[in-house]
Every structure is written in structure tokens, then in C-alpha cells.
View 1 (cartoon, helix red, strand yellow):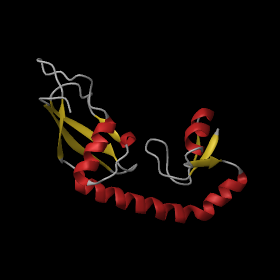
View 2 (cartoon, rainbow, N blue to C red):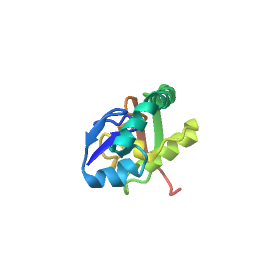
View 3 (cartoon, rainbow, N blue to C red):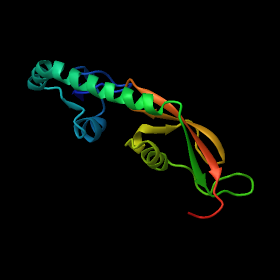
View 4 (tube, one colour):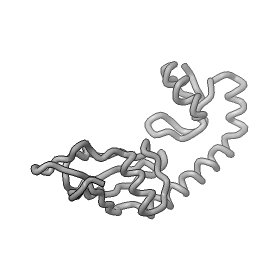
Length: 152
């Protein structure tokens, strides 16, 4: 199915580009999230007209993402979790927990879907976590997992 992109998407394409994707991906993700339109003649003409406006919005999002990236890049966050004697956690540290941690410490609202742990956080120690703020802007933080003495 051919669609026209309304946003720059990592590994997919850029604004105004006509790409061929599977129907389910187009219907369930791209079109439902207003990231693309069906590639009809009318839509192609419409996108050509508003392409500059879409580019401006994208650059604004990129600038905002860069500001956030400057604030959190290479920062270290500490999280307390219950663990066993051999330093393994009961459960793991999920992106939602990391998102809440950043919100508490820096008052920045980062969606859990933007957070990608490089390795699964299932033990005590320091872990690198990649945060994709924009298709062209990402930053890396360190999560320091320490033992919690009591249940919170």
C-alpha cells in the first residue's frame, strides 16, 4: 500500500515521501497516528502544498527534543529495587519506571515508548539507556540500580 509521510520517521522515510508499506502497518500505525495519508492524487497535491508547514513543525519538534537532550544527556539516575543475595532483582526496571524517575527528578515528561534500555535491567549495577526524543535526536542516560533495604 502506498502512503505519503507527514512526519520524518526513523528507518521509514521523510516528510512528503511516498513509500510502499504493508497494509496493516499503514492502517494501524501510520494513518491512525496521523503520520501518513493514503497516496491518492488529491492527497499528493495537498501534501505538496503543506510540505513547508510540516517541515517547520518538524524543526520545532527537533529543537524541543534537542533542548531535552541537552538537559538529560549523560545524566545518571538512581533507582532502588529489592534484590536477592546474588544481586538479581525481583522483576526488572521497565521504561515506565524510568519515565517516572525522569519526571520526578527533572520535571521532563518522556513517554515510556521513547525509552530503550540497551540491555535488560534485571540486576544491580549501572546500565545505559537510550532515549529517542525525535527521529534525528537521541540521548543516553545511565540508570544506577541499588538495593532497597525495605519494601517501598
